[in-house]
Amino acid sequence: MVPTRPLAKKTMRAVKTLVLGASEKPDRYSNMAVRLLQHHGHPVFAFAQKAGTIGEVPIHAQWPTETESIDTVTLYLNPTAQAQYTAAILALKPRRIIFNPGTENDELVEQAAAAGIQTLEACTLVMLRTGQY
Image (cartoon, rainbow, N blue to C red):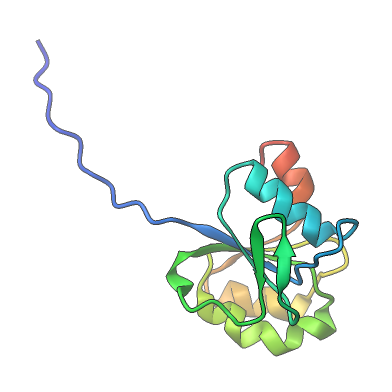
């Protein structure tokens, strides 16, 4: 008989996806991403300059204060609009940043790589629908 030992308890933290550029407009990809993330059970922090809601998810107009829980930042702002958030995104120290189509930003990719943050040029919606998220 093989002796068993108790499994070490892992400390799990609630990880979230920050959707930068969230919109209340249902035809916007950021809106679809928030809803699909929720559908797949991923906690979401939706952020935009204008507060609102997407279903039951509030869109915050203030940057998150509980930054340790942000695992992924998915971008829905063009590179020019991203510029004002670059330092704040890097300060979150997310595991990864997803550059959705139209948000590609070589400068932020370089800065993220230097900070040890994974970057992907991908579509969050496709990743969720194909089990790659």
